[in-house]
Amino acid sequence: MKYNIDTKENFDIIIPINELFDQDLAEKIQQFLSASILKNRSAIIDFSSIQSIENNLNQTIIDWHHKMYDSNLSFALCEMNDEIKKSMQENEESDILNITPKQIEAIDIVAMEGLERELLGDEDFDF
Image (cartoon, rainbow, N blue to C red; front, side, top):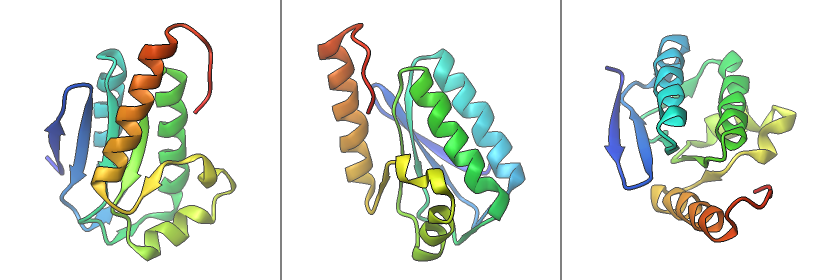
């Protein structure tokens, strides 16, 4: 396994243990996120051990964001180093991502969005 999972009540924190975010890691996380959608669980990816990312994977991460929110779930990224943040910002769609400096802030976003979904019920809204 190339990542660890910290399971919370309504979401999971995916913590890759590689220094490189490569296609192999992305495929494993994709499988996990697909299962999370089926289980109705939001997700956070903690980049604290990731030092670099293959350029073609920036769009993959944005696609994950879309899939999670299309499934009425939350998705956040945290602990990205400056190089990865800069790489992500090169994509025009990157401003839709929830990127936080610390994991606790990502947890807050996911928890607050979950509360909003509970309070608003079936009302249609965008985050």
